[in-house]
Image 1 (tube, rainbow, N blue to C red):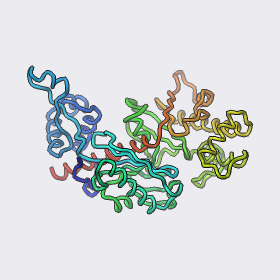
Image 2 (image 1 turned 45 degrees about the vertical axis):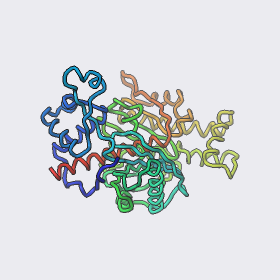
Image 3 (image 1 turned 30 degrees about the vertical axis):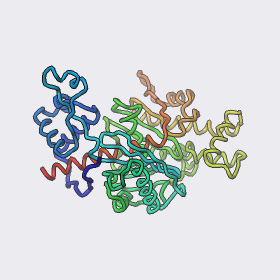
Image 4 (image 1 turned 180 degrees about the vertical axis):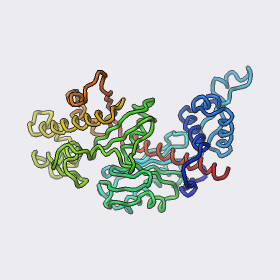
Length: 413
């Protein structure tokens, strides 16, 4: 397994031409279908059968796609000519995804058709580390996860990295992240200097949206929003099937929308952000002052103590969570009023607690939404761990590796 490494310098200047777009579209359709005949690719893409035949011949020659007879045709191959289908060649490339979270790196390895090959979790020494320390930790974790399948980091074609914070995905630039000690750095370039692979960087909530679209609750939905609540608050927006990032690459900072003028201090440095009221650190900031606590307890233990106290009727604990719920409902209503999405998915570790998505909170959101003669957006809850965030990062990298591989075909055509 493993194809020729793809490098960012293979990418020609300018926008891709129509043939390049068609190649990428054909690969995406084949990958999404699992296996599919050429005539069905033409039907799905709107590309002419002759063009599909030419493109798939190029993709087969490049080792990105392979022919396969569908199972039903193998069983009846004695009656007429079998209908040959195509599938993405899983061995063409090895792709990794990593989710950077509070003191943790979560990694996944997938092959070129999206099959998960290995998962791994590593612990960071601090909740916030220097860029060089983060790169060293990622490199070490990649060595460990590839060893699980008898491979090395040199076999990886592309790496997707999901970070909390304000990220310009197009430039691979980190304006600010709670996981990194420095601001305004081109982390992608640093990673590519340290690692033998192309790197694709994005806000972690965008990658959750990508994972939901490919593997989760949003399969088949073209317009939806994912909101994540953990140590921070994030949002991924998908419009017409594509992640929306804004003109600066950082257009979905739901956690930093303002819900209180001159309000609580947010870790971004501003005041009144939604995150400063509903995130883990915001809840603990209030609980540590207002409730008795064990100074030696971990963050998760202190959060659990807050939830238990609220369930047992502690007035102060209930007040802390109730205010967070009301702020969250207000923020959700603002999102609905702006975007009017078909679906909202609430995702992340905090979804294991119902104070943010109870019937009362959803009802409060709907009360604040502009009333029209139509039902409000559906709200779904998806509780999943960091491995799925990492899989979203890997899927993002797989798209990037595909684009670079296809562009290499254009260069050598």
